[in-house]
Amino acid sequence: MNLSLLLLLICPLMMVSMMFGMKGKHGRSAHSKQSETDWTLHVDYNELKVQNEMLKKEIQSLSK
Image 1 (cartoon, rainbow, N blue to C red):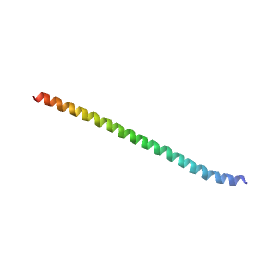
Image 2 (cartoon, one colour):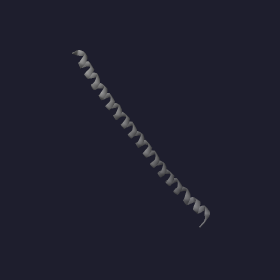
Image 3 (cartoon, one colour):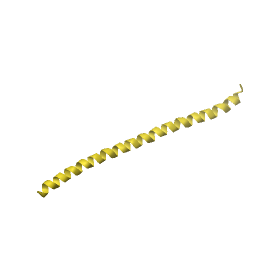
Image 4 (tube, one colour):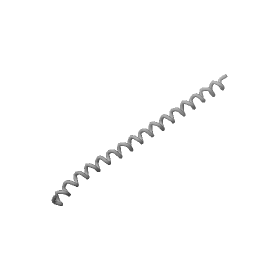
């Protein structure tokens, strides 16, 4: 087999494999960040609900 033919075939194969590799890495990273953001928002929301309930009880106790 001719060396130039071998190089000609290797270049596109390497490019395709790198593209698939980069796609997988970026896809997981973006999904991971989104999940982390969703979790943070969920935790913040629950903390605000607890604070809201505490403030309601405090207002009720003050109004009596």
